[in-house]
Image 1 (spheres, rainbow, N blue to C red):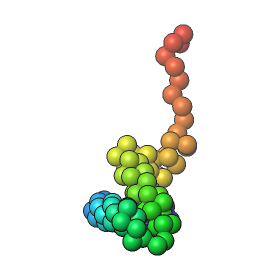
Image 2: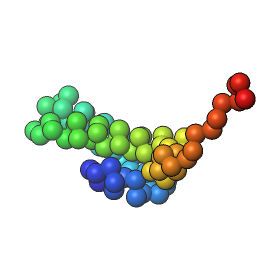
Image 3: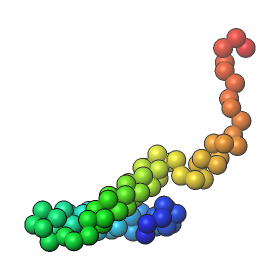
Image 4: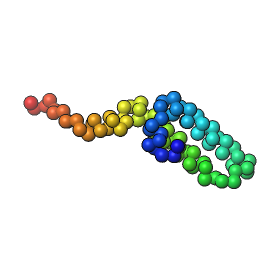
Length: 85
């Protein structure tokens, strides 16, 4: 689940579950790092990016700024201003 396209294919429920799991993974990795039990520290930034992707998709859906809304906006004819008409 590292690609944004895969995240966008998820349902809202799956996004919530994935976000909760990613936050738990990040907490566990940070705890292991602080107790010097974590050997591979590259997982922390990867998990942070995963959380960011999930939050981005949630915000897009919340504001109606998904791929379909963006495509519709690009093809829409701009409204004329009512001033001076």
